[in-house]
Amino acid sequence: MDVMRVLHMVGGAGDTSYASNSSLQKIAISKARSIVEDSILNLYGTSIPESLNIADLGCSSGPNTLLVIKEIIDVTHERCSQLQRSMPELRLFLNDLPGNDFNTIFMSLPAFYNTLKEEKGLPLGTCFIAGVPGSFYGRLFPINFLNFVHSSYSVHWLSQGVIKEAKLDSFDLPCYTPSVKELKAVIAMEGSFVLDQLQITEINWDTNDNDDSEYYFFDKKASGQNVAKYVRAVTESMLANHFGAEIIDELFEKYAENVGEHLAKEKTKHVNIIFSMTKKV
Image (cartoon, rainbow, N blue to C red; front, side, top):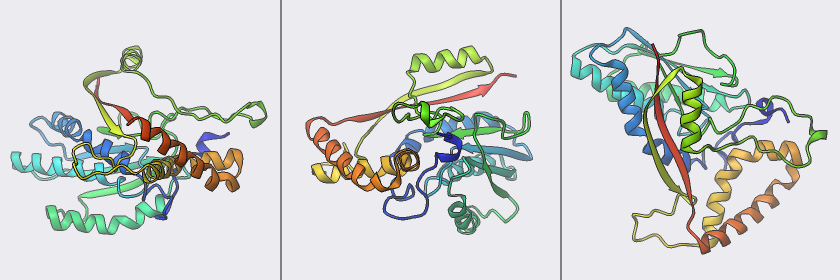
């Protein structure tokens, strides 16, 4: 399986699309907001550069794509106001694999620019957004080009290159979730960055299951379907490539049933590691 060619979230805005089934990722982004804000403020200090190059690696498509970009712009605007400085020119690069639905992102940009103008008074020419297709395991940008890099729910995808299907005994999902100890060891071994902050958060498998809501009522079938939809939005391209598109509907119907049975016995959570790093000078 050629991961770079096959892997992409389900595009468009349909019922099984990533855009319609990315509430898990949205919650994860919201939980990381404070660290993103701190990192941006640390980047500026008391000086504001004339321009900033910012990248979001693994941006996907849908409502979450511009969510982090908006947060970065909001923090930058607030900091500039505090220092009574003009906004820098922002060059924002959205990266994902070539199969990503970049068209949906691009069609949403005019409305996004209008929002920036209405809410922040930012004229056209303050913010430039471009798509950068390709694997972030290879080189995407010139040396020492980026000032700030963000990535959410992306680095768990492994870089595998091309694997001949004839050598596979079973489906191979190129995904790995490290422990905190492993993460720290990799950062230390690579040696180019200083680990600034690290937090561990948990999110319910069924994102509609709100621990803080006294009105939530567990429904086994609905919970199973909710989980199955966001898993399908992420993995369908790889599963269809390996097993054939004809089995996808039945596969996720059964998966939803199994997840519902599991959640009826035990509430299960995703564990997320949120961390920020600064490049050593």
